Image (cartoon, rainbow, N blue to C red):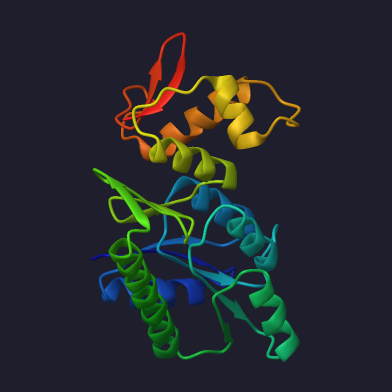
Length: 229
């Protein structure tokens, strides 16, 4: 399969070299040169792995990694010019899967990328074999891994979007009112109103539906509520 990666570094020569090397191996590579651009691309696309420099303009790499972890389990390899052990610990605590110190050998980076991608692919296969995956047409939800995959690509969902989708998938065909979903997903003490459900359903459709205006998965029963088909 062809993997899609995001490479983030403010040193353009490094980005160019990594991109060329990975694309030579058949991978698809997007690039960003600052933290804000990285987050923007992350929210727009689904990636199999992200290579992320620590020292970035606008938003530093640790903050970017933390923001990614709030929405996704996509593997992250962090790059840094610092070699102290404390920096590695900090990076891993923020959610990084691996750490590489500059200057690095591109062959070592590629070896680490391929190792992580193999583990991710194997973990997904094991989860499906163990019955931990709910699959409907092109959409798959991995419960314990907290991952949603569409046509082999991970979809970046917030925690509440994931719980909402999981609940609806666990109860296919059953129609839930907005008030019922609000109580079940957000809890009785949630200060918001039923429009919160509408917003989350709309965002879910934008992420998992090919045509959000004509959904295949999350349907509306007018005057009643929502259901998963």
